[in-house]
Length: 352
Image 1 (cartoon, one colour):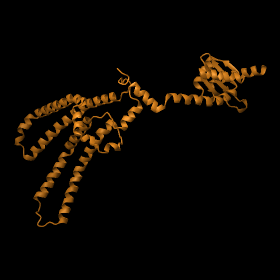
Image 2 (cartoon, rainbow, N blue to C red):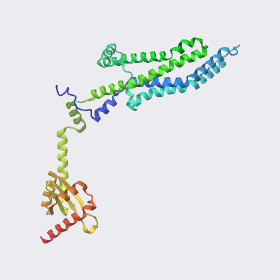
Image 3 (cartoon, rainbow, N blue to C red):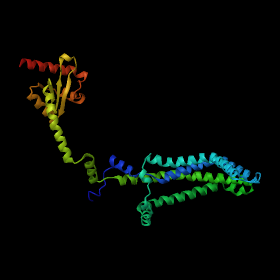
Image 4 (cartoon, one colour):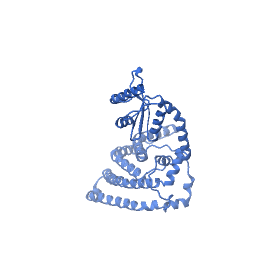
């Protein structure tokens, strides 16, 4: 397998952000559809009777009321406006709930994303050859078993739902027409709600598959990782030259700081901490430089060059290196040990 085909790396945050900005999400249309069907069916069960009663009363009032002997534009307009306002008062809450559920079904999957470019017309969608390719794609082929499972599930639930009400259905012919209509509507809505709930559960499987496919498509090859690093960080050789230049610029200042230190504490582990202390200031000792490895060797070299006393104290050096920050006072629990070493260094310098 070539390096360019080996998508063995998880997508980076930058790759995920790029995909999000391009409108590539792990999104299942089944989740939005099932949630919308559940909410709309439940809303019709709760609000359907008031809506039907209102429409029935409106029809009776319009069809059996007093006949218009004459009509003009003003009368027709006034009547029309009254009917529309009454219908809006009853239907708008239901339509608002359905709209909210349609939006919620997508937001819970991908969050809120503003992509105005997606609102622009895409004429490539009108290409019949592209449409046939999408229909015959492996993605749609993989979704075929899910579609068959959905149809089977809907058929089984509808069958068992009607079978449970078999006796009432057979005897409903004796009911008056209003009660018959109410019974049929209730049976249909309850069956639809059962189907919607089962489809909502099944849509979770579809969303899991879409998320798996999305993560698989976002995976990156080593070559893509290196290319992204070059874009994000620049040319590695150029970055290395910039770091080397920064070190050369910073070295004179660091050397001057170490030259003014009063003591350098070292450890065999390759750590060095330069301490400065001014008795007249009544302030605790302060760390002016610290480093390990090459930086520690550099600090000791500068200290030797400027006659700064150096003492090896492995435990104290390790504690200072772990807790003390450059240009900050040392911790209070380390005062005694550092003060003793400063006193010894001062006596050594005085004796010399």
